[in-house]
Image 1 (cartoon, rainbow, N blue to C red):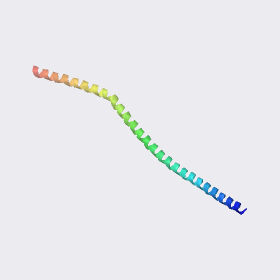
Image 2: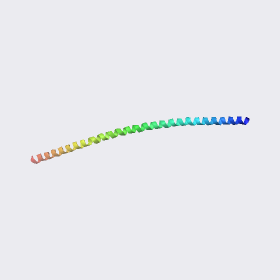
Image 3: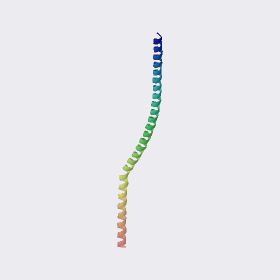
Image 4: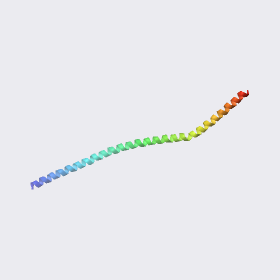
Length: 96
């Protein structure tokens, strides 16, 4: 009977130690998961900020790209007017 009691006490101690170990592992795992989640949230915020900045830059570039043909056309018209004025000035010098 004494050996059965000792065996039960030993088994109970082993079970309690196992339960304490499992609870410790669960607590540690939850803390680590929370830390990883916090890091991921921070990285996600950084990525979203970078995407917003890149989106702004793309829109700015697209606006510039839309305006360039208009600017090029105005430059072409201005160059043509300059050529006309230079020809007129040359004709006046030659005539005068």
